[in-house]
Image 1 (tube, rainbow, N blue to C red):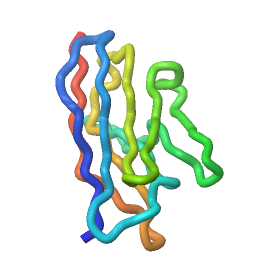
Image 2 (image 1 turned 180 degrees about the vertical axis):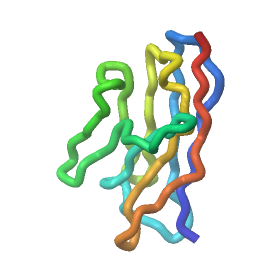
Image 3 (image 1 turned 60 degrees about the horizontal axis):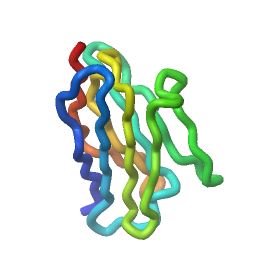
Image 4 (image 1 turned 180 degrees about the horizontal axis):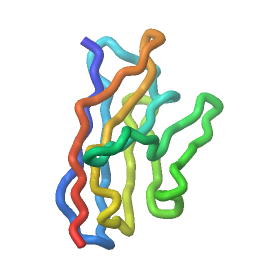
Length: 116
């Protein structure tokens, strides 16, 4: 069964750092080109945080530019999100997403809480 598994969330003080990981498992290969991170805060919609594009580039939400960095390991079909200078407004559930067999495949999410 194809799935994405996130890890690395937790509680951190403002100004701190966290590194999220997402690994594709099961009968799933070559999805690293479309892997990215989204987040959803309570009462808000799920929004893009950072993602790889099909031409190999990256895109970031304006609110995280210069603080977050997305990276990947192509051989392991995994993607990472290094989050620095965290702010309370970064508090959310962070989801990994890719495209597999023509459809969106989401992980279950990992909670990130930033205290002030």
